[in-house]
Image (cartoon, rainbow, N blue to C red; front, side, top):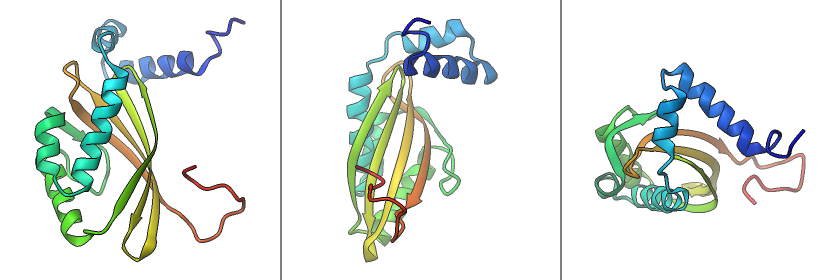
Length: 162
C-alpha cells in the first residue's frame, strides 16, 4: 500500500469526484475546473470576502469577490447574491459589536474551508466552518457552513477552535 493511496488528499479527491459525478460533473470537467486553481490566492480571497461582509460591507464584498452566481446552502440565508447582501446588512445593524477570528484556512483546488471563532453580543461565542467553491476566474460561487455555539462546559480541556 503506497503512501499516496492512503493519504487524505487522495481520499478527498475521490470524494470530490464522487460528489461532482453525482451532480452531473464528469471527471474531465472536474479536471478542467480545478487544474488552474490557485489555492493560496483563494484562501486570501475567502478571508477578505468573509471579513468584509461580516464587518458590514457585504455589497463591496460581493462586488470584489463573488462570481455571476452565489449558491447558498445555509438554511437561514436565502439563495443568491442579493439574499447574501440583505442577510449581512441586517446582521451588521442588529449586531454591530460582533467579532471574528480566522483560526484555520485550508484550500484544495477550487475549495476553501475557514474555521472561525466568533463572539457576538452578550459574549455568545460560536465556532464555524465555512466552505467556499470558486469558479475558474477565482470568484466565489457557492457556500456551505456549519455553526455551533460554544457550550459553557466541556468534557475536556480543549477549546473548539485552538
